[in-house]
Amino acid sequence: MTERGKILLLHGGVLLALFAAQYLLPAYHANNLARIMVLAVYAMGYNIAFGYTGLLSLGHALFFAMGMYGAGMAVWLVEWTALPAIAMGLAAGAVAAGAVGLLALRTAGVSFMIVTLMFAQAGYLLILYFARYTGGDEGFVVEAFGRRPFGLDLVQDGPRYAAAFCLFAVALAGNLALVRSRFGRVMLAMRENEARSRMLGYNPFRVKLLALVISGLYAGAAGAFYAMLFGYVGASFAMVQYSILPLLYTLLGGAGVVLGPLLGAGLMFYLIDIASGLTSAYLMVVGAVLVVLVLFAPKGLLGALRERGLKWLP
Amino acid sequence: MLRVEGLSAGYGAVQVLRGVGFEARAGEVTCIMGRNGAGKTTLMRAVMGLLPALAGEVRLDGRKVSDLPAHQVPKEGIGYVPQGRRLFGPLSVAENLQIGLLTRGRGAAVRDHVLSLFPRLRERLDQTSATLSGGEQQMLAIARALCLEPKVLLLDEPTEGLQPSMIGLIREVVMGLKAEGVAVVLVEQKVEAVLRMADQVVFLDRGEVAEVQPVAALRADPRPFRDHVGV
Image (cartoon, rainbow over all chains, first blue to last red; front, side):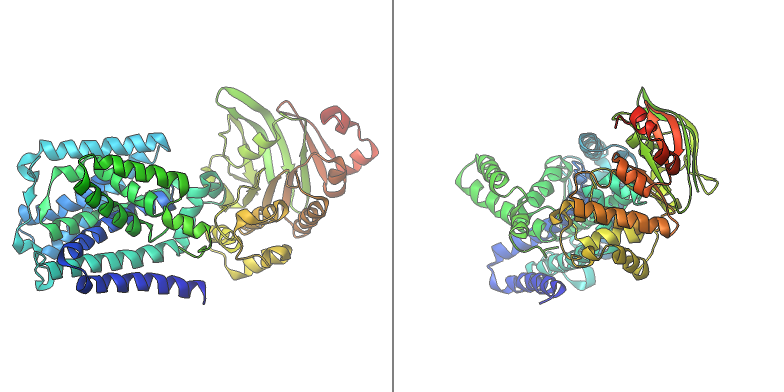
């Protein structure tokens, strides 16, 4: 079978399994899976910046929150319906990433991490400061009238799962197309050797800015769908933990592998879910698992598989 | 073709090049020689715009390129293969070439021409570049630079650390490029290679041009090699 055939078969199979899961899994796990798919889209966006372009950001919570607040506030404040509100969320994520990138990409490495972290913290503080419009610390509930795209009531489990699946499927297809495109190759080149890429005529700033905007678009989409599917918008989603989570998902599943974020998000979600049921010190369990992972599979689970034979994994 | 005039450059407060000037003509190989620390690699980097020029200028076919951003210089027609090759390791041979081709929007014809110079690469198009041998990696680094169809190609010690058969292949390619009219600027330390390939030699000494000699003169009187390179 050709490489292209294997890629289509694997990713098509994953989508088929996710589609079937809503009929096979109990409601609790199906709801969890819907949440995991949205978080995986967020981590996919992170993977585009970090895994494929080498941009280690600690500011992605800002892009996620911009998507969430962009969509949620459009419903809450101006009573937009679901589709334009979601579009607003996507645009907010991408614009925020572009604006942050214009300044932060003038730095690199640790400085880039710190600058992006500062932007995210500033965003978090602005949410608290403008509590009259954002709901401040308490956040706000997205009204049911704003959660009915195409007549589907996203408050219900079935439509919610379907919407999460559609988002994930589109994001996965887009991600595959991106990393196999010419621009995807240039992103990889930038990650591997920025100076050499410059010597081949590429403007690193432009390439990295575009990659960050695409990453922000994904994060914004995930944030907007999170608000629509689960009906709550809150300042806690703009905190630094939400910048670290997609990094952990990506590292666990495999940075620079398209399916890595899904695997990482799923494993981390259930690891926390199970460990928190056993002990209040569940973060220690999560930490121990991550240490083991770094020791035995430093490139993540799918990264390790790719090294050991599945070289065609995109 | 490539004219370097009064070029001064360095790293931070440390000035390495002082008023360097030479001309590299189409269809000729210009060798840059000098002792360690003479400024050979610094000169290459300064020509490419990777180091800001403190003074002087670089012109290609009369057009000033030394005030362009570094990523524009290859598009103007100057290719550079640095020491150490610096491939995109996880990418395949074909993908490395594709990244070179994309810069100027060139397609299959250029790729075929480049691969005709390196038949060994054609056999390894799907192979991850990090797994190539040292000689093959050097071929790929040169091939990738040629995908930009440069008028001038800067090669920084391309045969360093390679086995003799590979050195021969690389030298054949350099001579082929020369025959095609490319101006090759080559940092090289081996006198016999210089005498065989070069048309002129620029001797650098502590960041300054000590002498520029045609190879015919050096064959008759090889003293500059001893004076400026120590061989």
